[in-house]
Figure 1 (cartoon, rainbow, N blue to C red):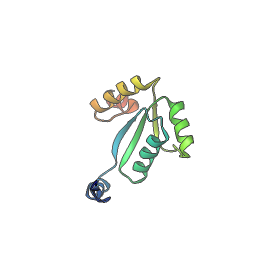
Figure 2: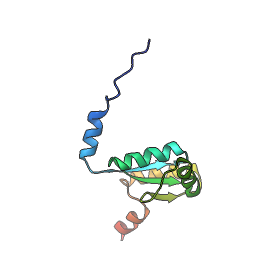
Figure 3: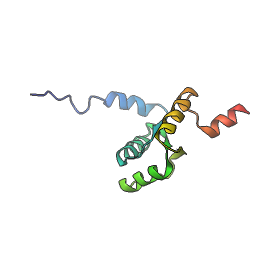
Figure 4: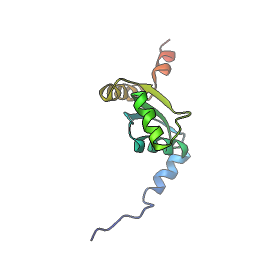
Length: 107
């Protein structure tokens, strides 16, 4: 028989995250309804400030399929999943800044 962990085992982590400012978070190639839903739910809980990186048409189609609005969610368009992964590595290496933030800090 499998012993299940209590459903509230992460509550103390979530409470700490809610007490802090939303974390800038990249969603890499989020082209499924589940990925979009996760990003939007975490944003709505005040846990993250999402940046979705990938083919914009596919991201928007996944949101439509999930019945989720992407209003207020930033999307950085890439051609395909490999480009999204490369951009996410760059995003992380630069401390979670997106393209327009990089250009303003480099001037």
